Amino acid sequence: MTGTRNSEIKLLFGLLCTALPLGSACADEIRMTGNESLSGNILSISGDGIVELTSPVSPDPIRLKSGAVEKVIFSPPKEAVESATAMLELINGDLLPVNLSEMDENSLTVTTGYAGTLTIPRKISKSLQLGIRSSKILYTGPQNLDEWLAGVESGQNWRFENKALVANGQAYVARKFNLPEKFSVSFTVKWQGNPNLQISLADPLGSKGRPSDRYLLQISANGFELKRESSKGSRYSNVILSNRTPDQFPDQSIDIQLKVDRKASRLHLWVNGEPEASGVDPVPEPPTGGAITLSSQTLNGNELEIKNITVADFDDSKDRHLAEKRGESKTDSLISRDDDRWGGHLLGARKSSEGLVFSFKSDFQQEPLELPESEVSTLFFATEEPQASVSQAHPFVLRLHEKGHLKVSSCSFSETSVLAKHPLLGDMNLSRSGISALECSDLDPQATSEE
Image (cartoon, rainbow, N blue to C red; front, side):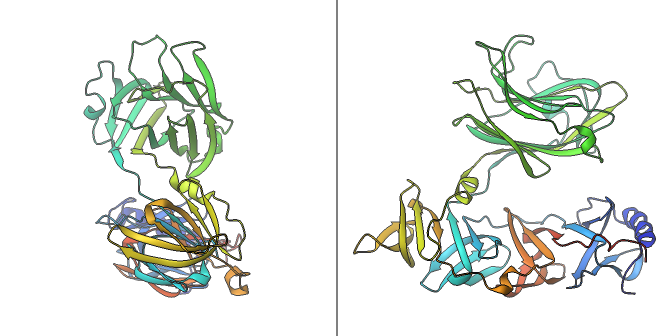
């Protein structure tokens, strides 16, 4: 058969979730249009959007018609993926996390954890951000309730179920961390009724009821509110206000991330993977505490759960690099870490005992500049007008670990690899462990209607 009706999809949803529990380590999560999900193992996605997958409930592969699948989240890799030190942007907007090995006037040679060694022509390269590093994970959990009670006398009323902290009514718990100046905290909140949750960051865990120096995130029926509490002067100051209310999230679940830069006094709120708002700490001295507290004020009978908690150091170099302005597009440009900028011609990069050295012929100097990699922030490559084929839509986006992505026209899967066709790089053999998700970028709104 060439496709599956909506009624058949709903039946498959029930059967597959019984045979392969959602979140199983060996299964991919397939998110359907219409907020349904199922588990299976993806075999292929054709150029016309037909998804083929395997399931123990069927001896033959199951085929879902074009438009039925919105997103595929791949099972996590069994081994750590090689970290990238640079981000390469292609002229079609694709982002590749890479490690640069060498460069000449025509091409870049890079190594990756998802495609091995690649030779990429400079004419299809737009920019290269250097000095990219992965965040250092300080904590992931929860693993149990005790880890949130250690050294805290007043923890109460939370319980641990299915890798989540669950409250029914009022509850409080805290955990001490050694938080750096820049850190991020992410978690998933799921609720019944209306949530009423307060999370404090950089908390000194002082006496209850007395003013403290800390950040307070409130999630309630009124939306999201981030305040700065101070032990001196005005006790509370608004930092971020958002009027997005819980009823705007029909599945009663949200993913939250807070990025805190105490040195620059800036805070950033992300909701469901998208930037929501940013704000500035109005108090001159940042809070120095290291604890995180979770306080539920939800009414009895309405459970609230927190899971997927991750605490990490916060490196904003990716955001800063991607915001750099390139200047003249028909010449190469180089920006140093001290914000010096040159236009001219990038001759290449050679290996030395201390790493790569870039050679750049500036428009204003006779001799080429020789700059070690540690002093280079961003490179912009001279580009011509995009070719017509580059701007053509491609129906699928492969999400790579470390925030990279590739637009592809088709792909097939094995247990360890993905064969994909890319508009600029051609046929690619990718490691399945290097891909976090696949999304349909051009869904047909009529595709899932009854035939």
